[in-house]
Amino acid sequence: MQIRWLAVQLALWCAGLPQVVPAATPTTLLTQATVLGATDCAAVGSALTTKTVLVPAGKYRPFFKNSLDGNDGKQALAPQIEVPAFRLDAAAVTRGEYLRFVCQHPAWRRSNVKAIFAEETYLTGWSNDLDLGTQPQDQPVTHVSWFAARAFCAARNARLPTLAEWERAGGDAGAVAAAQRDETSAAGNPFRFAMGRPATDLRHSGLTFAGVWEWTADFNSVAAGNAGGSGSLFCGDGFRSNDARDYAAFLRYSFRSSLRGNYSLKNLGFRCAEDVRP
Amino acid sequence: MKLRSMLALLSVLTAGVPNLGTGGEPATPPVNERSVYQLQSRWTTDGGRRIQLAELAGHHQIVAFIFTSCAAACPLLVKSLQVQSRGMPARAQQRTRFLLVSMDPQRDTVPALRRYRQELALDQQWTLLRGADDDVRELAAVLGFNYERTPDGQFAHSNQVTLLDPDGEIVLQHPTADGAVSIMGAAIEACDSATDATRPSIAGKKCS
Image: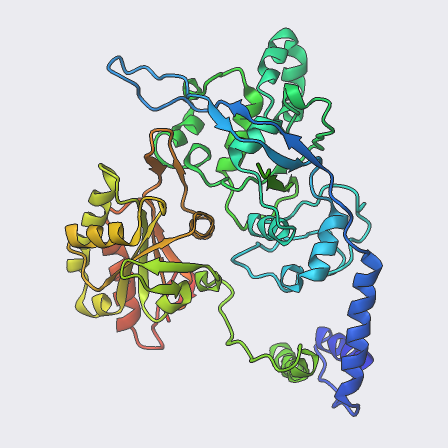
């Protein structure tokens, strides 16, 4: 039972032909498979230190107003939420980093992952379980599910940022004011705003966004979901948003509301967050 | 022909697998890769028993999320499920259990869940579970259930009800409690009453 024999069998099977009975010993397969796997993962190298940014305690105002407030039936602005300090990866997780992860965690390789945790498009573009193909390894990994992103961060003793944390760091509440000053830039390139821009106090922190949407720990919260009154936002009552001019936030919240945990989309990546020990 | 040769090849390949294993590890039973019961999270029942979701296998489970301090919709949801369950065909009723998972583990302690069971007179067909925040979030993601804590300490949430088959695979989901159990009971009954030849499928999957 040698690798070559298996390859022949696979070729025969693909061609719809019957197999040839093997005449070799199983130990050959064991040795070769072990060496093969080890070589591939060794070539990937050891984990680099991930650059993270300290995000000081700050505030974030949810995109949605409170539900009906008081007797006049009008809605109040949602109160600001205090977001305690935390650390956030300076950049989205790259393909190279993700490759190291699947090397060390075989359950998350493309051929092993369970359907409930990642749909078929998981790691589309990779040549095989441990080969990025022609894709640059220093770009954000995409085609990863929420479950996979979560497992990646957990393996690093980190976690996905909450929606409030992500919005506080990358939602850039100042973008609305900026957009008012320069209507054309916001209108012409809403996605650049929507996919993340550092908050004013993080402009020089090294925090970067690279044009992919990003998973959050609680992407399946109601404000971003299909329940209660919030779902009606997507049926046209944009008046419920705190600031209807914040088109970037509207795009972000709409996008999140469309997700299921096993979705593995072309333009959806992630980064990890860590608690700050007091 | 192709299928048979593929199976033959698979059997050859799997025959080699024990040699490749880490050695000495017990073989894990095959799992349905769409089963919710693949989740490894640990939960506590209102009886204080620690369980994994896989222990719920063997029955159809009708699953909903609750928080017991909820004043408005949640007791109605549970009441509605309860009333509908009495109308289920007897055989389907025997094969079905109800699972209520708290989205508020901080306040829904074991005693709180136990009180809830008494207040709503939930019999042994019902399992009440609490778990870690992160595990609730994960189960919710698997089931496509959305919820969030609101600043006033309540929860905004969907009212989705899910039917898991005895393997833990999602076979039906209903956006509200209204009508959910009736539809699910009918589907289970249709499965049970069919012979092998005429067995219908729920959501594209043959009844198990």
